[in-house]
Image 1 (cartoon, rainbow, N blue to C red):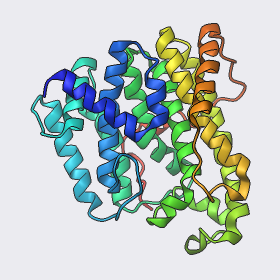
Image 2 (cartoon, helix red, strand yellow):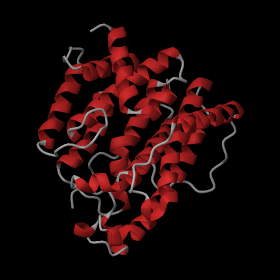
Image 3 (cartoon, one colour):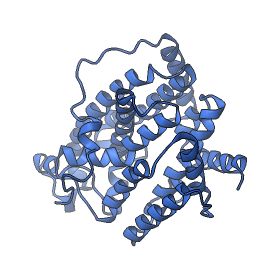
Image 4 (cartoon, rainbow, N blue to C red):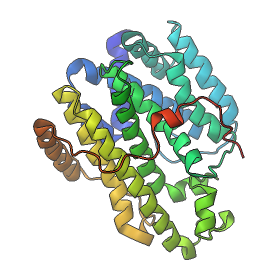
Length: 318
């Protein structure tokens, strides 16, 4: 498939798979926008394959995930070798990787997150939670930064890109507590559940809603810390990339804040941002990008990329 066809198919995948990211992606310059679409297509396809869903829709039956993860690795390696895979999303990744210097190690950092789900892994403590967030979102943030032209030598800016991915995933976890529970997943550390006296088998009980709301308050506080840190990295990007990233940050963190504001009713209906709300965030982000004076950090996030991207030195299976 020629480049223009891969780009168009990737654009359509983002349009259907994430209206929030699609809205923000329009703000990039032409070349960056196309590469962001190409990378997103691979991320979306990996997520859909392992979750048995269609473009981020309802989670399907969670079986044979290990085989699916091996398929991801095989297809990604094939794409990176320059061979056509017959799958638009993997071919898109091969293309953007060749243009931006993405590597198999970059991809495998993300695939390891799907591997954890395949192993029916559960986080036991803060470190486990944040390592999972690194794999499924922080590592994607780093690749997005590389696609936007950030040098691999610019470790601090890549750290800040990781921070934004972590913030996004924390918002996701907060919003999707009940959906994840329905398919046998839980990303709240066991130590937290113990502190709030929540038994895993009773996780979704209405009697636990107040405790879950308190857990979400803890999560969203962490989301805010990482999102604020990410703005320092966004400040170093060209204007249009900065505007796009700040827009995405505002749109996505608004989801986390809405979950928090709903308290124990947060999971009665799925939280989303309307078109009007997205437009408002884009306009505010424009002013923020134009002024480009992010507030200095009063508190550094506890977890950094260097803490989390350390291979498998620590066994995440407990």
